[in-house]
Image 1 (spheres, rainbow, N blue to C red):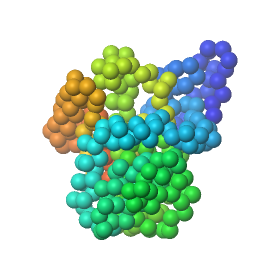
Image 2: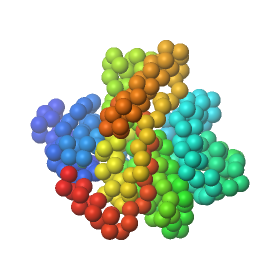
Image 3: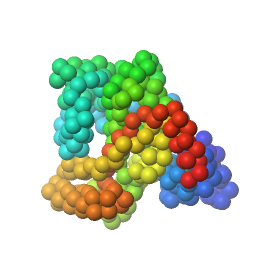
Amino acid sequence: MISVAPTPHFAVVATPACLLCGSAAVKTKLQHDQKRLQKCLHCGVLFVVPQPSPAALANHFQRGGLVSIDHFDNQFEVNRQPVLSHIVNYIRSRKDEGSILDVGCATGFFLANFAKRSTWDACGVELTPSAAQEARRCGIQVHVGNTQSAKFKDQSFDVITVLDAFYYFPNPASELAELRRVLKQEGFLALELPWATSRAWQRAPIIGSLLNGTRIPLLQSSDHLFYYTPKSVTRLLEQCGFVVQTIRPLPANQQAGLLRELLWKTYSFFSRLLWRLSVGSVFLGPRFLVVAGKAAAGAREDNARLADQL
Ligand SMILES: [Zn+2]
């Protein structure tokens, strides 16, 4: 936790080092009351300080996060469909059977695509008990708690997904170490993330009002602890013993209202076009999928050394 002086002299507040790479080259991008959004100039990740305590985070999810189960059933699942369909199709293009773990599986609306097929074993981890109960109704095995407390055996899963949830982990490196342990040697990990900058745009006064219908100040509302770009999450994955196999732009979640839906679709279309024209070097959001496999032991050391030199 960062100690904040009672008077508004921000110069006396110690600037914390990057929570991922430890670099002291950190810049404040936004501040609201005592919360700040910091950008690491070394690895590129954005992170919120002070971070909530483990107890506050646990309490947040015990209460069901930000949305109720009804909201999941009536709206959220519908809104997520374009993105999730893309991810389901990608996974099926690589594998048509095996074991899949979804970390933060919510009510199981993604895993249901696999649970209904006899060739897949679908397993979820979920912090919110009421959501886990809903997922079990779809035939999914769900552990209530986190990945560590599930105590899965080594190399249990062919595919592991963390969809729109990886930014909640207060210690992403230790989470990735656990996911690496339970992933089979030839398996792959798929992380779906919002692009850091588009997340910030949505909270800006004018663009935010257009894209969201209303402006929600980033640091007032956000429960995200980290904001990733393809580059910063690649660096983190490589340091944690993974090899990134592909990064794919994803469509936006479905929006309420015709105008907003049109705006988001147009934005997504041009962003994906730019990604293709630039052969994967320019990415402007709004979401992306990063897929990684396990690095061999020697390559893991090389990656860590290379990442330190960047
Ligand atoms: Zn950093």
